[in-house]
Amino acid sequence: MKNVMLLTGAGQIGMAIARRMGAGMKIFVGDKKLENAQAVAETMNQAGFDATAVETDLSSRESIRKLIAQGQKQGEIKMLINAAGVSPSQAPVEAILKVDLYGTAVLLEEVGRVIAPGGVGVTISSQSGWRMPALTARQDALLATAPVEELLKLDFLRPENIRDTLHAYQLAKRCNEKRVMAQAVEWGKRGARLNAIAPGIIVTPLALDEFNGPRGDFYKNMFAKCPAGRPGTADEVANVAELMMSDKGAFITGSTFLMDGGATASYFYGPLNPDHPE
Image 1 (cartoon, rainbow, N blue to C red):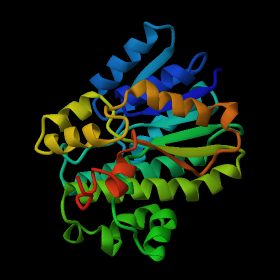
Image 2 (cartoon, rainbow, N blue to C red):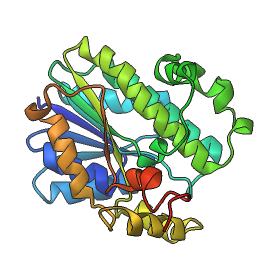
Image 3 (cartoon, one colour):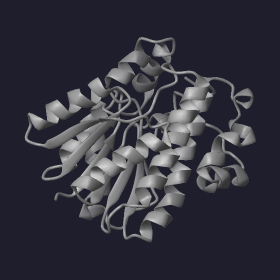
């Protein structure tokens, strides 16, 4: 029996974190597209890891439970890396809410019921949620603690109250971070930790879709005018995840680490602010 890592989302960020943290573990790679999970598992296996692909639909509680059950057959679940999701250019409002918001909430809840003592999880959020205006204290509390099956019934999450796919994505990511805070309390009862990372523009196939999509100029302008002056890499996200998931991060739980090259800072107080004098 081995310690088990669950990786949801067969993308560059998730794989970079899994490669950093997964040596000696049994790794289950879950993705809605089995061929994507298989490609990541094959790449990792060829690099000396022990990875198995599993078809997993983050928007389905049953599918998430099946992934967890497969992991439990191999050993204790010690690590969760949730890098699954869809972007504003990839999906309609309803899909973004179902996958990014509801699905992440289900995953954190279900894994939190079985995570081993000393276990740790990280979920990938986004800088995007940091640019949305503040919600009310009650709305924040509902995002954090409402029963998962009630989340999509909340008035402010109904499609008619959401402007567009970007607004849906921002709400989803705000919910992810609030959910991490509340679930970290539950995970703590099992001696486990849970955090989030909110990356800015990271060069991945998903980001390239955005660069070439209808909002491409917006994204290119964003990294050109952020203090770093460039997009980030998946390995830089893995650097932060390694801190959070290793013993060096033993006092970090319920937190979100914003790593966006300063784009959010520039959005509020620099050249990305439309009211900023040139």
